[in-house]
Length: 238
Image 1 (tube, rainbow, N blue to C red):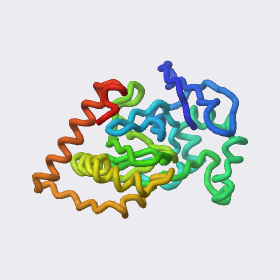
Image 2 (cartoon, rainbow, N blue to C red):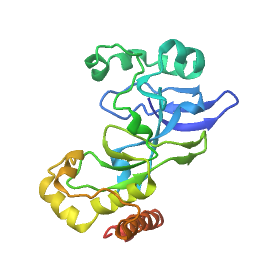
Image 3 (cartoon, rainbow, N blue to C red):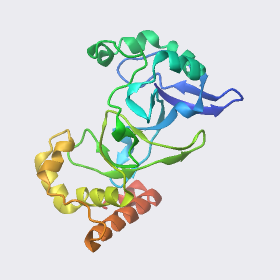
């Protein structure tokens, strides 16, 4: 469940669902949920070259210890009563999702898809699923006002390559955003730059002892820092 509003109350975190996003509109509703279930949500439109900033949040019903399956309903109802009550208002809509029907309606009505160990990687290189090239950025945990440091959760409009090392992620981003790679990708990508684009670029395995690899990772990190400080117009040529 996407949410856009976060306010503290004595009982938990007050959220409002993003009712006007997506093809199937749902009623607007505000309610209190457990803050531990709210994560920053990254969409493809939030990603630019060297920068990825979530603009929404998501009520995540999966745990990092067992990410492929939603928390079982009896456990969820007992341990997250507020969130369960909030989601229950959308039960008809959630059970009517095409993906829920495609998977045989076997899991809880609030089950999500495309969630796995990769979702909770320490770092990932991401780019929009729709585009004519790859505009890559590195993501990791970020500080939130409502529940400390949290993983950024990419949605289905993002492509991601997970890694557990910051330098390796920046090394990959540097190569993907480089001019030679961009020339190759523009000749191959039509509209959906999926992970298969990596098959068309010879990317060496990251070697932390190689100076050129370290230099590329450092340049990527600097580019991310500059992008965060610069305006879109100033940075458009980088």
